[in-house]
Each structure stands twice: as structure tokens, then as C-alpha cells.
Image (tube, one colour):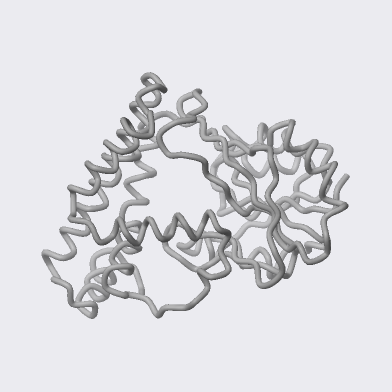
Amino acid sequence: MIDVSFFILTYNEEIHLERCLKSIRGLTDQVFLVDSHSTDQTCEIARSMGAQVTQRPWPGKHSEQFNWGLDNLPIQTKWVFKLDADEYLTEELCEELRARVSSLPEDCTGIVFPLRRVFMGRHIQHGTGTVRLLRMFQFGKARCEARWMDEHILPESGHLVDFEHEFADDNLQDIGWWTRKHEGYALKEAIDLLDIELGLFAKTNASADLSEEAQAKRKLKQRYAKQPLFFRAFVYFIYRYFFKLGFTEGVQGFLWNFLQGWWYRTLVDAKIYEIKKACGNDVAKIKAHLKNHFSVEI
């Protein structure tokens, strides 16, 4: 056992949860779920496998739900690992956690792991490059940043350590579910890009606390936001599929790069176009439009 609590946000995750919880079995007996009133067997599966379940209505933002959990769950371990229900730890990562966590220096407040992307059963290794995420941190020394999309864990002090082995993101739902999910994401991503371009939100210097990988990704997104609508989605797909060798991943690679790299990005731009057509670049009008048409308060 290691001194860590796993923290998972859930809503109707019966298809994934058993696999997720099995992957962390033997690392700890401290597993916490904050569930947004699932209507399937999510909570029953969690409790049967020893997890502690707290139910709370979805507040509209991932960061708000996660930070509420940090403030209210009875976490008593030194470390917290943020895990999604459709993710799991590889056996190699479990062994690395057992071998290294107890000997980490006290001023290490966060651990960064490589992400294994699995789409329609295939490990996607080309197209998006290596993704590394801060997912484990000292309890009380980090928060989730309050963003509409692309939220990261922000450590309050100390330094980060990179681990070698991966955790996997492997959603088992069908392609119809995937597209509906990204339709929901599109408005949030549009708001995020409009914020970069027009400044919808008050700015902070919190990004300075991000990991190097997260800071690099944020800078690329800022560059992307300055490019012309629709054209940027097309160029992004070409870059991923041809220059980053996405075409070597077969049918799954084509679908992943086309749907996530072009279709979704074009949908985001269509929402931005629609909002700007109604409001121009007037920030006050955009905020009022988002409130009146989408019930989004900024």
C-alpha cells in the first residue's frame, strides 16, 4: 500500500468503473467517488469494490466539482491521485508507484505521468504527440484551475517529478456517444477560445504554476486562437494526420484525427462564428448572449 487516495468524478460510468477500480487494487484502500446522481449501477459497483461514494449534483464545471471534493471528502493520505472512470493505471505504473512514492523528496508536491491514448480499441501513438499530465499531488497543496476547458492541476508550491510509465484513457462507449459528448464540449471550447481572443474572464498568473508540458500546450492554444476561423481546423488536421504521422494508425487513426482534430474543431469555430455574428467582438454582448441563449454565467 502507498499513502495515496484516488479521487474519481462519475456519472453513469458502469461500463468503465470496474476496470478502473481493478487497476488500482492493491495500491490503497482509500478510493473516493463524487457521483452526480448516476442512474445506472455506478454507485453499486463502486461500493461493492470498497470505494466511498458521495453524491452531489453536477455544478456545471469539472473544476468546481473536483475542488469541492478536495474541501469536503475525508481524505487523510499524503497524496491524491485524480483519475477519471474511463481511465486506468497500467501494471508498469502501479509498480513504479510502489517503488518510488515513499522515497520522493518532501518538496515534491506533484507527479506528472505520460498518457496512453486508446481510441476504438487502438493505442494511438501518432498524430498528437506525447501528452503528460499532472495527476498526483500532495493533499492540500494543489487545486484544479477554474476553466471551462483544458483544466489542469495547479500545485501551490514545491516542484514536480516526472514518472516514466503511463496511465491510459480508453473510453468504451460507441462513436455516437463520443460525438454527442464533443458537441457538449464545443461550446465550452468556444468560450475558452473567445476568452483568449477577447478577454472574457479576469486574468491571473496561475498558468505560471503549470507543468512545463501544460504551459507549452497553453501557449500553442493561444497561437491557435489567433488564426482564422475554420482554416485553422483544416490546417490542424493536416498537421496531425500527415506531418505527425496520424495516417500510420489505420482506420482508428483516421477517425481519431478527423473527428477530434477537424470535425470537433470546426464545430467549435461554427459556434464562435455564430456568437460573433450576433454580438461582434463586444464582450458585454457576448456575455449577455451566453447567459440568455445557453444559461452560461460569466
